[in-house]
Length: 506
Image (tube, rainbow, N blue to C red; front, side, top):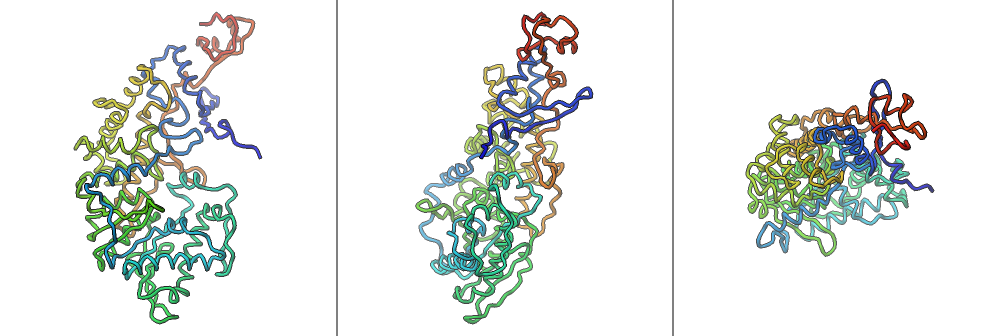
């Protein structure tokens, strides 16, 4: 087997200049090479740094074109620490309604020999927890896996090579040995979640007691309630039929429904995204929310309202925009800028708080939002008071911080990033709508590439035109004094990248 090297996974950007194609491959040397050329060509460096100087913005993307990731769990731990005494509870109120992140639960369960047995083990788990807390209603909330999605990049990152679509045709069908490969395919997960519903409609009567299971599957939702040992009452819940794609948002549509008959709701999920939404939406839901998370000895239940009271409504509302801007499943993070630093910066200024409260109010970015977000970005790079990331890049570069990733993104790339963050925040802010009107992500920071959506990293070329030519000669004996020298032919001096000897074209 031939392993991929750094060279193999690098992204190449192709442009045309003066009738010929110029290809730039993202690698660890490209930034330095372009800087060398720019200095030799006597190009103003502050102007040059207004470009990304590579096919990808190094602060936002890895060299293979995937989005930059960050540790989201640190944000959860920091926000937990905001409450004194701690907001974790020793026991869950009796009669609470449980709302489960369906696929997250699947990921934690040990595979069984057959699909039918696995479906029953999931149901037994939910029934067991509900029984222990005297709960009468349990919600099972799924994701849906669309072929074209803003989460394409994240799902591609998690995907396992060799995944194939496997049809589930019988309850006694054996579960594949390559379970992780099976779950790496979105269509397989859709089929599995639909199979759960079909199976539970037959077997739930044997497994559940005085309990109602509300099961989302695809865009539909049904309540399963035991009538006799063998019979179930299956009722469609039309106000939970939804076009929402992510369980992250759909969970809170179910919470809003549960608040009509339950004063205490427990959301079970390992995802920091879900916790941020719980903080932001808790007042609208109208019930006491708890967030059940962690594994093993780290399993805990957090009283959401306690943390909401400590932080305040404005900050909790702003956290949606901030979380998207600093990195979530669909939007990249900023290299070297952690979420805890970003939250502390947010908390230091009511102006910053107001800025991120506006993010996601509508799908089109308010033009007045770009400037304060850019100033916030400068502050994240320890340049408080500076309002231009292009100037920040120049300031940091001339101060000796010339490593490509250590610089903030240029303004062009940052504005595309803001569009993506705003789009995701707008989806999050519509979590309580069953059928939100969501425009195409194209022109909101993404573009179509085949059957996938990929980030539109920039609208400017990677570098000034004179740099893109990347002219370098191969002169060995002519000392670059004649017209055969490609640098001289383009009226440019030779650079350190040229292979010439005893050069006189300097």
